[in-house]
Figure 1 (tube, rainbow, N blue to C red):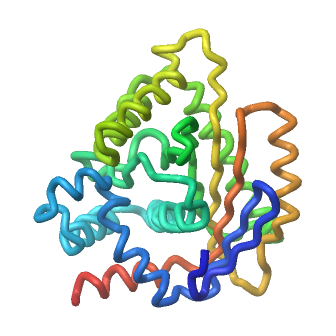
Figure 2 (tube, rainbow, N blue to C red):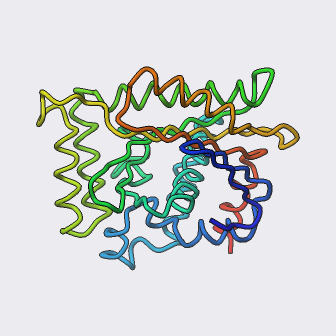
Length: 262
């Protein structure tokens, strides 16, 4: 991945993404992908006149304006995760959408689900966002990651039907029929209601978005330590840890607002 202002440090399955500058490159990637992120690639393709960039942007900002400050940090953090994970890992395709269909509430279900290009693996992702409030950025970041790990573990093993209902609806909105059949099969393998005897662990990507000064940066070695700790517990079939650090969320908010006024 080569985005001006964005630096990636990777060590095996631990990733740190430092957004040093909210650059024109990153802005253009958001412009090009916002509709598909929010509504799903298939839906946007089928209804081009409805799901235009401008309509999507207005809908995004309408939802955003109704959120608390903490929810706004989470909403913009999740948007960054949608953009940067796919750019970092070209073997992954989004099979879930950002918006909660038909509602302006916080999305119910997994934050993001990805299909590996092998067509054999679904990755379930949770994104946690927040500001530095511990002594170090590493401590604050680890807290976010531990929260994401707890949530995704709970959801993968969940008996709550709406989680899997929403995942199936998202799959229909993001993929063409042939790929959807693959997705449906993979979701059914992981779903308690279909495969009640399965060891429901799943493949997980836990994501943190930390808003903190770049004078102190997240260390990938710290992520490796957390990775090894989680791996020992055997919670997942496989695990990726992905952390994003950005000084504030204000520039993203300002960019989207300015786009609306163009």
